[in-house]
Length: 192
Image (cartoon, rainbow, N blue to C red; front, side, top):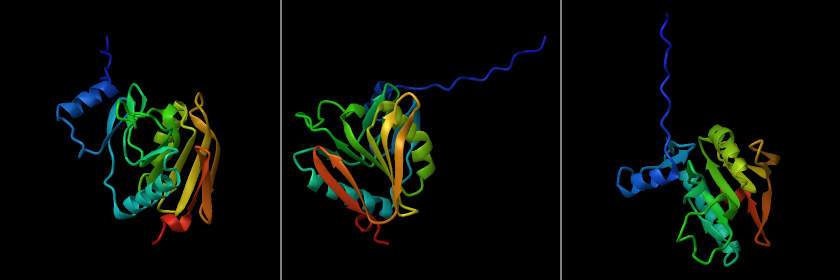
């Protein structure tokens, strides 16, 4: 009789265990790590173009939506029991506690933005289905390499995709958030 080959299972952790690792100092805030489906994934370093685009978006959304929405950059977003991601920009529904008593969830999100300098395929193939499944209503990928913005809206939670998408490479893109129209031009972001 031939022995059956065993393939060890991947050991996954949950968000609570991830936070315990942070609290114990196993991971620090300098460790750029996200938790996706129970797997810790290293995030690439932030280069100058990525940082500049994120900063420009933060200034645009924070100034336009002051007192209407909570705008944060590279903070945690708890998607489910096994996933906590750190998007480049989140525009969130206002909350009296300013998100000091708990991380935002997908239900709090008005707009989520990932700035992609070298991770376009990852942002589309790994993160997009997670965001759609969680019900994030509006997702933008700022594509640094192609100087464009890819917009996804109307999530189909069961199919893990967005029903509507478009790409903008010239002019401007707008989003109405908290009753305010925010306009971002390509020249706001790409000055190189």
